[in-house]
Length: 527
Image 1: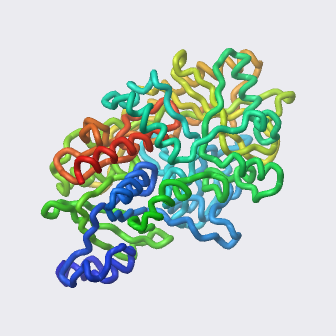
Image 2: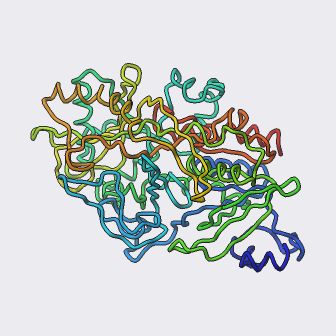
């Protein structure tokens, strides 16, 4: 790196190493050299965490770059994360007003002003859809409900048609579930605890209308939740903590894969670093990144050379970066499949107004533990979701995953200098129609109506968002069948961007299992 280049970047070799904390001795970096990393992982969500752990266990030094914060330091209130009902500056990524998925209550807007900060939840707005993503070390595992669902085997061919289901169900799904710490609620405790009254009401209504109702696995520590309910441990799921992080009971990646990865001594993580460019450099790749402060300002620009780069910035982050790098000529060998095949996992939300004899409980665990499965008959799987307001609402609330056929594409807008997504809100109509196969029937049977006060004024459906972005660098199209990007050896996609738009259930177990499958092959054949 020339002195002129150093000046332009605003960073020297010494500050690069000091600022990112690479595990590299000074002897390995003589003065003329640029910092070199055997493997760089962009992102610390499910795919990235799996890749980092398995590479490190195979003896490879790994550096992870994360756009969000570390989330390891308590705030002034003594807690790392804020609650869903009292969002503060920690809640949203670089916004000055909250943008809650459920943003009305009793017909009144409930979003509030906050300080601009590198908060934990990104509500990224594209034409036609808002995509919710976790920002921080642990990615989406920080902000989801922890519903750890393995798709039914008969549906797997529609999820990943080029992948052998035998090896997924015999090897990689079990490996993923073990690594994530997946478990089921104690059925006996479920029947008696006040915090799942809402779920029991959801079960009654589903079964009375003839729908299959099922317990759903989760990564919450169920023994801890029992202690919360008994008053012998600090409340977390029972204190409205979910959307903006969970302080105690949830087994996020920080407690599972990433903890194991760090324990190898071969993995380091640089939070508040955003990758802007990846370019070929004589058999390796030059990676350029911006270091951010907590207001989102760029405080330094850094470069490192990586022998191998794993794109794990999430479906949106990975897709946006690859589309930009192809369009601007940084990675000209990428094929025309990059940016295609993006879907919302068919997400749509709704609420129902129950009768006064069906209270759902003022204390509600924020961790969903059950679902209604009408996939085969109606194309919808609905999680019975909490509405943790702290008051009795007599409302049942649901997040549905549906068999939505629409797929969008990311493209580079050169004039605006940004990546755009061509999703259309009208494409949510099939999802609404599929969700109605469940809830129209329940309303008819129970004599109840839809809530119209949760997503606006007289608006029934939450059709403006997704929690489950998938696709954009689809397996066996933009990549080979193990995530190797075409045209650039040593570049890999290992996250939800590989999955073409739908998993039939909550997606993170499938993302994790696919990453386990792919990294095993990559380590065996490429390293």
